[in-house]
Image (cartoon, rainbow, N blue to C red; front, side, top):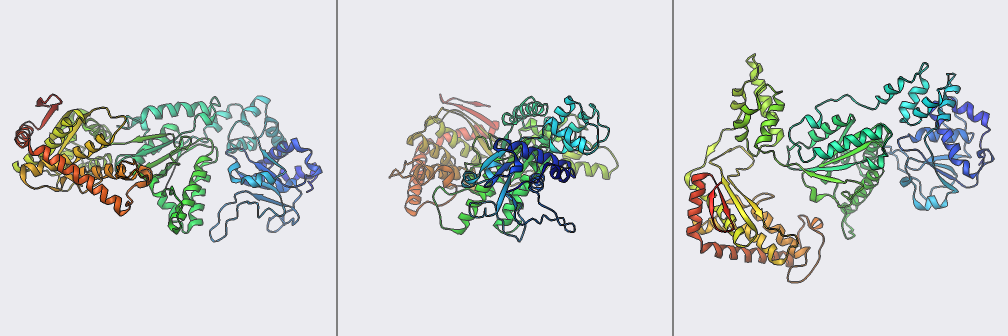
Length: 623
């Protein structure tokens, strides 16, 4: 291929500063293979600097090769020379044709935004693969001169060369640029907070230390004192609905002074067929890979699916295989300044490769707020209009409510106050409290006996060293679940579980239901019916023993715990799971049958005091 002479190149490139700088980078990168104007056999691969757009480098390569534009359409019309993007933008309705070893005929220059966009066989076939450096101080001043502007001092030009592409171009085009303007362009990529900083929000105690460290590192990166490779961070936030995962992402973006880019897996999938979904994913990542810094928040991350451990011919499995693989590529090639935040209600459903170090390095679980945090959340949404200590009793009445529900309660209370043309008062919040229905004496005794069964069996089997039992005297009939009682264990260490200790876990889970049967002769639905219930936990342990741990009748491995998920095992193995559960149900029922009077006495103490703590020694005291 033949390259245009330097004078012609300068005339073409001077039309656009970005293209000029891109051209300088291409020429400099190719310096190790000889002078470009003599031409090069074969084709060259250029990988643009992180955070820079490939469009300008494509235009610069065409100009360097002497390709002309149609004066009417502006399209490049030279038919003998071809410049291609390794991974061109996906266009709906048009077949996507990334570079491959089968479609390189006539290609002289391949431009890639990332080396991973270039297949390994294409790299091998290329005359050279060159990584383009960002513009130098000399390139910046060359652009100033060609635009008829006074060049910068060496110091200023050197500083500008370190800035993102958009800030550098803005400085080149500004007629009267001074050193003071550097601070101004540094603010281009910082955004005004659109909400409170994470550190102003109540709760999030487990994740705030990590976030503070990230804020410090991002500040050092912005000051060019820390490489982004040592700064980059990916984090997964999981927890029940309403625990503040979206609010966390917004608060983190405000704390970092970055813009927030939000999407969901569902939004990508709604774009259409497979190619359309992949195009939507690529567009989202391209939007943040501009070197300006952003928090990329992807909700419903579990919905992206997981790849099978074993190949499958099922079309749906192949679909998600492609989706997950493409997502992994995009996640691994995030540009500088991008912080990835994934959110899910079901972390176990996420492909393990996504959670690998280097992609998502941290995982924090957001739990339902405790009483003190609930009071702080109420105070925050009330704008500090009410003293924190005055909200303690209200917070106690809202046990089990997530932060989102607390925010809505305050909003309703504020609306009621506005309708009366007055400021928010404590009575407005009290009026929004859910109406509680008291448990009957018989129901409270059943709740207490259920929890007593859990506690007694856990201590007898060495599963715990102490257990604290608590029951409530009322419930919200409109709530998603009426949690009437709970048992909190001081667990005995079990770092290397055995078949025996796993069976003990199942027994403890079934002990509450067994205690009900022993005392009352029948069972309530309180032990099952939901994820996280007693029966669900017992079943999950039994399925893992048989299908993953090799602790069934035959030591068989059907997949990892994550692979098993909620998929059924072969009928024979499901029957074995049922036998394990039946065996532990009989075991724990027989254990408690001998302790019926003790269960009744303990249940009476629990009803009287509301809370009782049991020690391994057998002593019991009001908690």
